[in-house]
Length: 122
Image 1 (cartoon, rainbow, N blue to C red):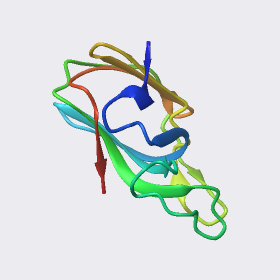
Image 2 (cartoon, rainbow, N blue to C red; image 1 turned 90 degrees about the vertical axis):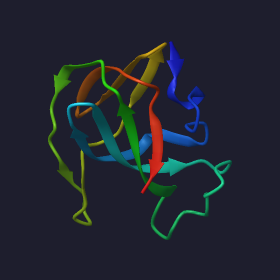
Image 3 (tube, helix red, strand yellow; image 1 turned 90 degrees about the horizontal axis):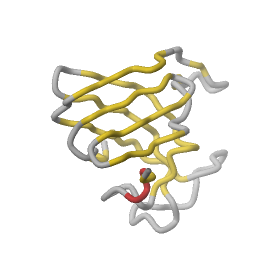
Image 4 (tube, one colour; image 1 turned 45 degrees about the horizontal axis):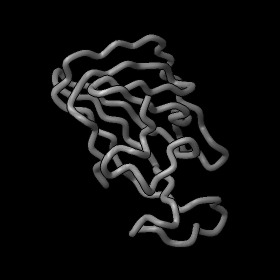
């Protein structure tokens, strides 16, 4: 199984400590809006803001031309942080084999068959 960071455009990010803010689904696509941790090797990296552990940038992980979407577990409960911001937790696992992608976190587990995902900066 391949790891997300070997996908084109995903090499300089760290999803395991990123915050999943929303999941949006339509007939042909699904997207995961995320405050993404940028590694120092990322071109947009800057030192973390005061009070933050990492450099974050808002982005969407977009799966287009869905062939199949299979929720193994779905638990979309938002948590509220001390500063009032809401999120769904992290993307703890993101692996793939050819055109099948598996994502998992406290929000659920999903298998997606689609075109390769794209990372879009918001």
